Image (tube, rainbow, N blue to C red; front, side, top):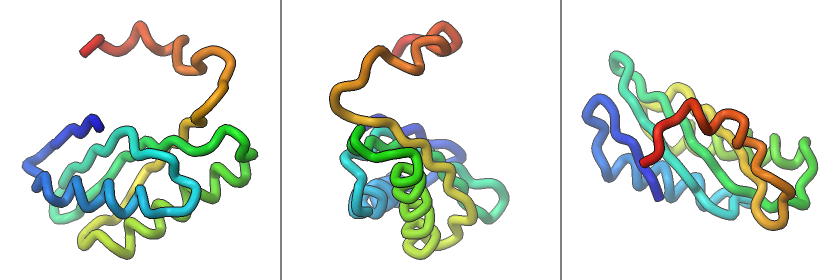
Amino acid sequence: MFHRLMDAVDPELVERVEQVAASVDGVSSVDDVRLRWIGHQLHAEIELSVGNALNLHQGHDVATETEHALLHAIQRLTSALVHVHPVGEVEGDPHQANAHHFPVN
């Protein structure tokens, strides 16, 4: 798991976000969690993996349910942007076109 902490977010809070997201039906794994404070409000960006047999609507439903679960579970969280990746056999990497924009860790 790769976490980026910004603006002094408590690592235990990041772990709680991961736990809540992982508990949502349809989530295969939580791949990345980014939290930041903006004023007195928390904002999250989360990357999830879901089964590649899900259609677009089902994948969107998993993302929406994850956001909803987080908004209820995490105090002061006011937004959660959830990005979904398929797991399993997928032909090619759809993110490869953007890879040259990001540094290698």
